[in-house]
Image 1 (cartoon, rainbow over the protein chains, first blue to last red):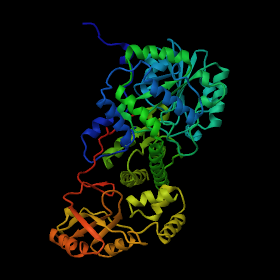
Image 2: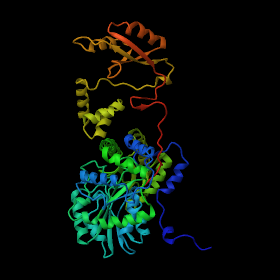
Image 3: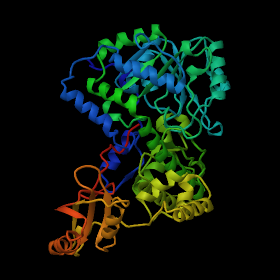
Image 4: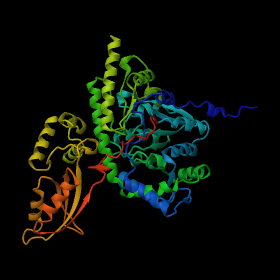
Length: 390
Length: 160
């Protein structure tokens, strides 16, 4: 029999988190700080709206681009938050999570051989999506001393005549880094100079703890060369609803819609009705969750300081990214030993790219009570490691 | 900071001032001052403990009593409310809109205890027109805390 598999797919590395699943499934009483989703339930009024839509029998396909009502609300939202205007008929597509938007966005923009710049550490799907589109992923290794922001010099260094798209994943998973207006202005200058495009993954836009989130589409000259991706998972605690969206220049959205139409048809109808409600009445829910995350963020930063662990202060998403280089072991080793010794699960930083080596991703989408126990265990573990090194 | 502080201690009155300072990103002395101020202003009225008495051996019966009363000239409901809340067995007294006037919650050792209170102390007050007593059979959730079952984290242990 012939080999039934595609070489391209077989050659894609599986996610680095996988092996920890196997260890954890054998253990009891594990405290996991390993998830990338909110610990809150979807706000009740949003869930109710989903149920109502089912009761009314709204169970058909929507248009390929998504419910017009929802696209309109998304445009209202972006006008309200980012002060940018999109045409709901031509510049918005509703997708199955932000992840689908990433996939079809790269496919719509890249031909084989085109290079996609991916600042890392970052979310695990950009690289495989680029490969599946036939494009070549090019990692930009971000540095802790820049608080894991992307600098214009780093960007410039990686541009070739094949470079087409820059992925801009801020606020960032796993580092919690943000890009402020001045940082974005510097990037925009390089993008325009080299005639590139940007795919800005702003799924954590609502979760910033310094100033309000700034999108690169707000920087002059960038609106026409940016696909903005966002969704409902993180801001409204709606991960399981699988709903995201992309906004951008009409010609790009049109081609994305073409792929979406053939591969997906449309995003889940129930989720779309619920999302309309979330955008209309969900601002208070977001504020409440953000306040809780911020308290936990401060708690963790303080805990690291007390145990003498190096960590830059992250102002976005719900992750902290402490450095463990002082112990002279890899992130993988640290995470495995920590799990075995103290039953606390964290994700090794290198799961998000080589430049994450020497760091850990710790999620604070957990109650303060849980975090408190986890940090007591971490302190004990870190002290033991230091003792061993003497 | 005030509202955020209140929201936290409403759920956890045992959290200490040092922890509060950390999670709110302020100095401990600010927390101490703010708490003292709110106690003086009567915003913070006490620090109570949420107890699921059902899990203890102590017998306790609670009831909600709807009370219809005749308001008094110049006093409205305040006078009669005061007469009622001064009984130590009364837990709370609320003035309510709708079909009746006062909602009284009460704790006693037994059904008989509560019936005696209603028939002898409450119903005999001059301005009380009628009462309707509802005994609480089971508490599922109280003060925002679910008592009926343990809340479990249903998420996967790792997601990217």
